[in-house]
Structures are given as C-alpha cells and as structure tokens.
Length: 489
Ligand code: ADP
Image 1 (cartoon, rainbow, N blue to C red):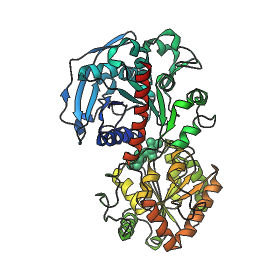
Image 2: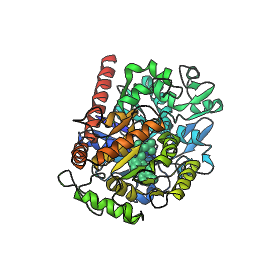
Image 3: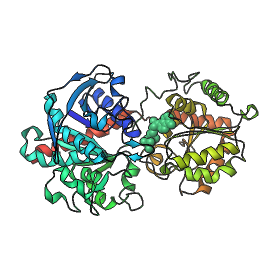
Image 4: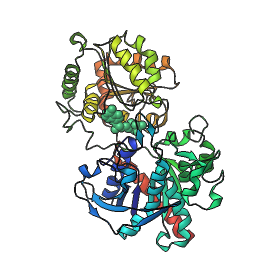
C-alpha cells in the first residue's frame, strides 16, 4: 500500500495545532504496519533548521496556477524512522514567520494562491519522485483543491488509475472560503462552480472541494462525524456532509505515546507509572514551586488547562465560573496563546488571585508536559472539539479530565458518575457555566476519597490511545476503497 500524506503542517517540521500531530504520527504508525507512506508539505521558514540535510528532488518544474506560471523546487528529507518527506519550495509563499497569518494582521491575503499552488503541486511531486501512490490522503481546506484535481485527472492519467483519495477534516470551522474571483485561479472545469461543487453562497470554499471530490471523508472522532452533519456543528456544511454520509467516518486520533509517556518523559523532574504514582506527587510539587503558588495552598487540588486561546475552547465558561471556583480550595494553572481578548480576560483574573491562579502566556512544550503531569485535574470545557489531544494526554498522566461531552472529548472520556466501575473522568452535557462548575465540585468531592481517586487514575492510565489502533482503522478504509476502484475498472 503506497500512501501520500498531503498536509499543510506536520510535526516536527511545522506545527500550529492538532493537524501537525496527526500528519506527523499517523504516517509512522502506518509505516510500522508495513505501508510505504510518504509526506508532502510546504517548505516553511524554520524547516531547514530542523532538517539540515535536504536533497533536491527531480528538476524544478513549472506549475500553472490560474494566470501564473510558477517555478518551484522539491526537496526530500525524512523522519527519524526513515519516512520520506517531500517539501515544496516556493519562498515567495512559504518563507514567512508564520504558517497562515500574522497574529496582528490576521491571515495572509494570498492564502488562496499559497494553498492552491500546494494542491496543484501534488501530482508534480509524485512525478519528481517517480512514485505514484494508490492512496492520496489529504488534510483540511489547504488540500481541498487537490481532491478535485485528482478526481478530474484520474480518467485521463494512467498513473492515477486505481488510486483513491481520502480527505480528513480536522476542524470544520476552518473552511478556506475566498471570493469568487479566485475561481479562475483553480483551473477547474466550469461545472464545478455550482452549489454541488466548490461554490458556497457565491464564494469559493476549498474545504467543500475536499468533501465533494474525494472518494472518502473522515474526521477525527466518531462523535464529531455525527455532529458535523447537524446544523449546530456543521458550520454551514452539514447538508453537504449529509449527502456524503455513507462515505463519512470518524476515527479517533491517537497520541504519540513515545513523547507522551509519564514513565519516560524527560521534561519531568520525576517519572512515574500506574504501579507507582509517587513521582506524580513530585511533579506537582515541582510545578507549584516553579510557578510560585502560595505555599499554604500546596495541598489544594491543582487544576490545569492547556490550549489555543480560542472561543472554541470554552474560556467563556471558565471566565464565568472563576469567581465561584476560586472560592473553593483549588489552584489553577493555564497555559496558552491566541486570541488577544481571551489573553486579556485571563490576565485580569490572574491579578485577582495572584497566588492561586497562574497564567503562562506562551507556547511552551516543556511546560505542557509539566502541567499534564503535575495537575490533579484537567479542564477541557470546549464548546466543540473535533478530537482533542490534551484530554488523552491527561488520562495517560493520571490527571483526571473534566470535559464537555462533545466530539472526541465524548469518545475518549468515560463518565465516572454514569459508569462508576469504568469511569475515567467527568463530563458535563449542557454547554453551560453552572453544569461545568457542578462537575468540578463533583470531582473535588471524589478527589477527597484518595483510594477511589487512585483507582480511577489507574484506569485512566490504562486506556489505549495508541496510533496503531487508529492506523488500523484508516488502513481498513484504504483497503475498502482500493477494492472498490479495482471492481469499477
Ligand atoms: P487544537 O488542534 O484544536 O489546537 P488539540 O488538543 O487537538 O487542539 O491539539 C493541541 C496541541 O497543541 C496539543 O499537542 C497541545 O499540547 C499543544 N498546545 C496547545 N497550546 C500549547 C501551548 N501554549 N504550549 C504548549 N503546547 C500547546
């Protein structure tokens, strides 16, 4: 099985969120299952530092994008385990400080050109590598046009015969919607400009292109797959997804269990495992000291929260409950960057409780590990959450999650109040501040029963969120698609 992963980011080369984790880890798991898998992504600024040895790949082709004829270069590197990674060099587009936009000025205006060019380059990179995959696994709106190019080229390009495309939606809120004036730049057949194609209320919707023109659509949890077919969660594409319901499946992301393993984690002052949780206590103490929490509160349960500061992540609920929450004997640490108004709100709250609420306003991987290990309880009140990784890290680090029962949060956490024998965390079912606060109170009550709490911690740690499990599910989809292609030929 030959699979090309096309993604606008992949860990460890370039990352802004969960997509990079998936595009970095899933290929590794597929490789271990015996697949010939390769990755294709843009050559951003910073990639060369992480990958000093890059070899040129093929000649430098010219790629037509609407009225433009761009000269591009391909480079080849590899992951630590030897998976080939192909990079598209076009400095004018990708050699920038950020991947998609400037935090102050917002998204780059030429994002349509940048990612239409990337999508266009998919066929060219296969040509340059002299390698023609049977599965093109495309991710998010940045590769939506590639689904259309592959669909329309397949009948006339023998190297695409028998191949299939899988398109994964990592977050349907990000759709790549651009003015109609960009349609000619896509060079797609005129009939694609229709509500059944790429058009979306008079604009170009690149995510929609991926949904409509790929052979199969996946998303990153079973619950989110259901949710996005509803008006509440579909961000306007629920109807389009309902039409593809039989080709739509949710597969829960895995986590990188080499990086996220409390038994071996080099970021921790002390490691631990399910047989001996004493190291976790040391991690908590180290974190409390480092962040200068008040010493007479060290015994309080420590609540942790990590993530992009975006409306999606439920910071509005947190802000509402904070006055009540901080009346309880708890400490709270928040790590995150993002929306300036959310940063401002948290900073103001921090001033009110300077010894018991700590806000670390940076992107800090070590601190993320220290918080996962050192906290007792992890908060993830996301309004919606396609999959979410932090709740899975928490479970593995015996940090009990309190989550809104949505998307991947619902699929990865078992409610202890409904399932006392198998529960791994707490869930609230209505997106409301009071429901969230009630669950925190329930968690604090159980926390005081240390034997019961420890039993739950051990159950949490034993959950299997390995990528191997998810990779087998993707492999089953690839297999099924290739069988269909063969019978159709
Ligand atoms: P999303 O993709 O919506 O941002 P996920 O939970 O799927 O959310 O993935 C977020 C990833 O980014 C996790 O690996 C998380 O630990 C990491 N992360 C987010 N914010 C920070 C931060 N400020 N510092 C360190 N890691 C962070």
